[in-house]
Length: 463
Image 1 (cartoon, rainbow, N blue to C red):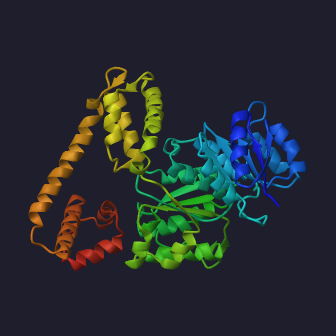
Image 2 (image 1 turned 60 degrees about the vertical axis):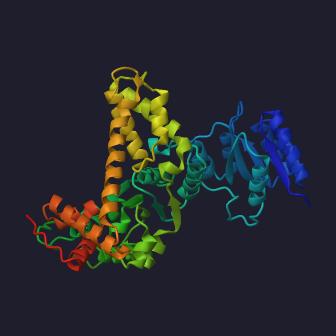
Image 3 (image 1 turned 135 degrees about the vertical axis):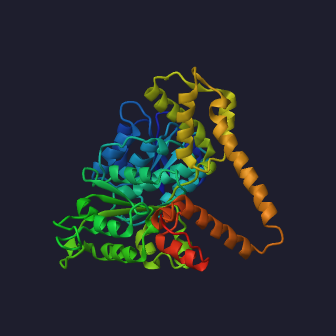
């Protein structure tokens, strides 16, 4: 028996093109010119897949999807179509239960591939079925601006995972927007009216972080004059965002693992386990698998955190989004500074598009803010953004030349050891010997710093 596909679009040419292509591929198709017509046909036609346009008059695709979810009729796998997609649209559609999301103008071969993939699930618990939803949409923050394929995949994952309580691990370079993805997941979840509490695991000393996370009983340590619940308890019913989770010390990794396994915690100085209902979203710019290999991160904790992985692409891999981000930040900072008519000259745009953005979206945002502030008129010229970029290039070039002279006729092992020793020594000197601040500056844990200081016989006293 042929699989049935319902095509819902107010543009007759789109419906006809899809129908012809899908019929040639062996499917049975039926057309509907509106959301209302589609809902009427579903009970009789019982399609396996519905291709649903987002922008239609009277009842749009999102409202059609909501009503379909509430209906008692058979639920087809829904593939949304639009030429005007945004991050919110993608996340909302996936959250409401859409199977996938394709952008117009689309390649008919791509559409057939998505349809074939949607037809694979045969049980009611897989991706093509509807899931519970909330009706409120979340605002789209700056880091979530962009419609590149890489970001579309991120939005789809956010929409799908939001309605679950699954633990999420967000990985990506600094400045890619990991915390904003965590906020988007929380805002689109049933926990949205409960707290989202962010914790930077790399910025708080180990002992303080332990008491902050797990709380303590009166008398647990000097100065503990009263019981204090920790951040896990404060986030009860909501979400705890553990940023820089790769920096946790071994002892804290063990305690976090126990919380994830047992869904209970014990305060410092306490004995009674306290049940908690907290969703964990973790983030890191570290390669955790490499840290596992180096025995700096527990493998069992990694698998507990990595239930749903989300990889944030660096800006250099989504350069098509740079113009959208530029417009977004121009609008934002134009309003803040009273320069709402400011714009980038073609030469400035070319300069920004050519740059590799090691600091990712955060660096682009800071660059646009600086340019808006420095521009004396509405036009932002290359000189308003070029100085900082040129200094970066010049410094990088000079450093490469110096390294080339120093490393001639040296083994790779010797070179790496010398560079590492020099970096640690300089960082210690800058931080006046403070081990914790030095570790933070270098992006490593305090225990790793002490190990390397001992290995290289580095002796810098703390002032």
